[in-house]
Image (cartoon, rainbow over all chains, first blue to last red; front, side, top):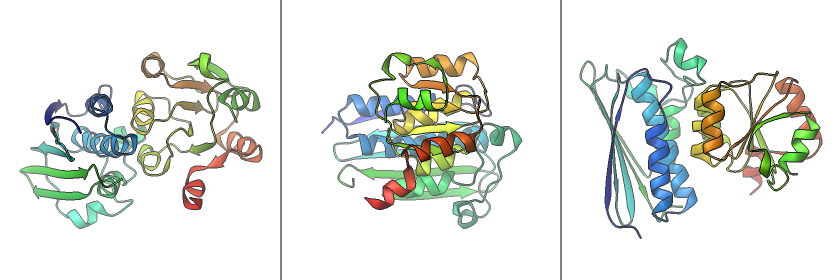
Amino acid sequence: MPEPLDLEYDIVADDYQTAGEASSNLKETLKMLGISSPICRRAAIITYEAEMNLVIHGGGGRIIANIDEDKIEIKTIDQGPGIPDVALAIQEGYTTAGDQAREMGFGAGMGLPNIKRNADIFEITTEVGKGTTLRTVINFTSE
Amino acid sequence: MTLEDIANLVNAEILCGGEKLAALDVPRAYACDLMSDVLALCSPGALLITGLTNIQIVRTAQMLDIQSVLFVRGKTPPQDTISLASKSEISLLVTKISMFQACGILYKEGVKPCLLADMEE
């Protein structure tokens, strides 16, 4: 089991070129810590989808990952437009992504469902006009 | 089936990662232009068949431990896509045939779909 480790990344809005670097870095760190491949993939999918949400919807933001002995907590925080209807946003296929995101292969309406599917704990706190905080936890025992 | 077999079957040009073609076993494939669908359904180690060539294809592959990507309809990706793939040890191939044709040929030759394979387990 790894020693506790905290990682933070600033994510820039609408930057589709460097998007994914933070998620890639987090996944490499988890691999180096000896965490199993299935857990690394789940953490990578959560972080990558959440990172793309910050790029596409959130106006940029911050990713905070706390790696503990028995779990990883991944949080994203933005000061973007917020989510008016969270239940709708979690539905597979629902999307508000624009043309640029779609041209890159995103905006299929699977981001939040993918995050939820891979997380043991999935919480969204959001306020329209203020921003969104997403908190997820993966327990290392939940392979 | 190895990646070399796949390259021969679809007459693909190798853009990077050619040194491991013969050694890389590719039992499954997933064909899609929607990256979130890939993130939801593609199995680790599968071949990703896509018509998109931007750098996020390689990022998606990184997240899922996908080691090979086949671009269809003769689309050559930009240099930054090839550079990141090369750095990440992901093999990139490009074929002139369509996604439908590529899928048909590989399916007929025994490459398994990801979803079906997962359901059988």
